[in-house]
Amino acid sequence: MTSLAGRVRSVGPLVSRIAAALFGGYALAALASVAVLALPMSTPQAVLTGEMASFLVYAAAVIWVFAVRSALRAWAGLLVVAAPLLLAAWSVW
Image (cartoon, rainbow, N blue to C red; front, side, top):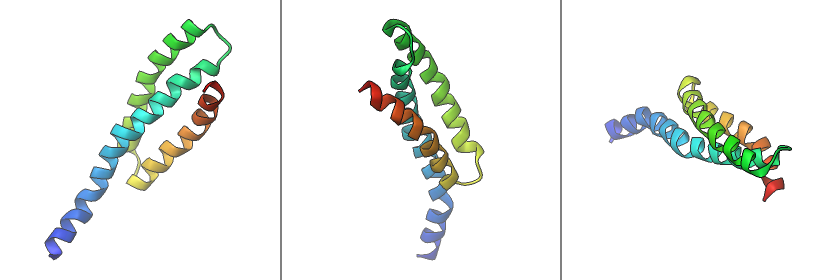
């Protein structure tokens, strides 16, 4: 039983980072693509800008998740960036 607990303790942070990269990065990219609609530009231009920006945001989120020291900091960083994007996206919805 000790070996199972040790294995979970060693693999758990990696699984958390992978989940943060997949799901947190996707959520961040989706928020960024919607938040761009709040910018003062025409709607078609904002949609194209948001679409292109979402690829950059997702890639940056994945890099961030695996670059920080701990999985907790990875999740915290994603939440800190998501908060203002959520406020901007909320005004559009």
